[in-house]
Amino acid sequence: MKVIVIDVGNTSTGIGLYDAGRISRVTHIKGGIRQYQDQCAEAVRKAAKGMVSGAVLGSVVPTVNNAWKRLIKNELGCELLIVRAGLKMDVAVDYPEPQTIGADRLADAVGGVRRYGVPLIVADFGTALTFDVITKDKRYVGGVITPGLPLMSDYLYERTALLPRVEFTGVCPLVGKTTQQAMRIGAQIGYRGIVREIVTYLKKSIDSRFKLVATGGYARWALEDSGMSFIIDPDLTLFGLGCIWESNAD
Image (tube, rainbow, N blue to C red; front, side, top):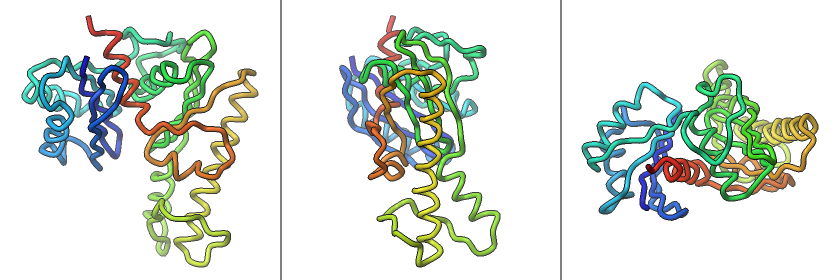
């Protein structure tokens, strides 16, 4: 079955096609449906290219969900499945207030289990950096949330008079010879320290041999040459959304 998968984050939107476990025709839009409705509609048409069985939305911005319902109805003529705790999925949610879990975190957990098995820790490098823990009996038990790279760099830029906005590109120098280089070292090397400490803490707290999977727009840049044994999977969230749709297709 072919399904449109939509991942709405705080700063970007990912749209693609899920087809029998494969993700393709992906478009990433810097921003969301409020600012770029035409681009979102075009991305949906590009992903669909004909008949699809449905569409599924994982959104951490609830105020735009109705706009996505209307767009999918207009473009595809079908209803939109909005991911939330309580739907059928490959993991059991063992969490005091399951309705507070972000749809992206549920999708990461489901996609991670389907692709890599359990036990598992999934790190998602987005606006926020999240860690989600799935135990060997396929229970989602929670995780960790910390500010993401863009939040940290934007805060320095906005709250200081002289520091520029750092670009997350290029090779990390040994010593910063410019302000931009110095900030890049702080972002990349410092962020690896955060990741390493959180993973060590989680492994020690739960005492299990977890596989490590990373996704999100900043995962590869942050983890490249870090020595940490992460599998980097850029399409994991979209894949997980497709898996959740399959489980609820009836």
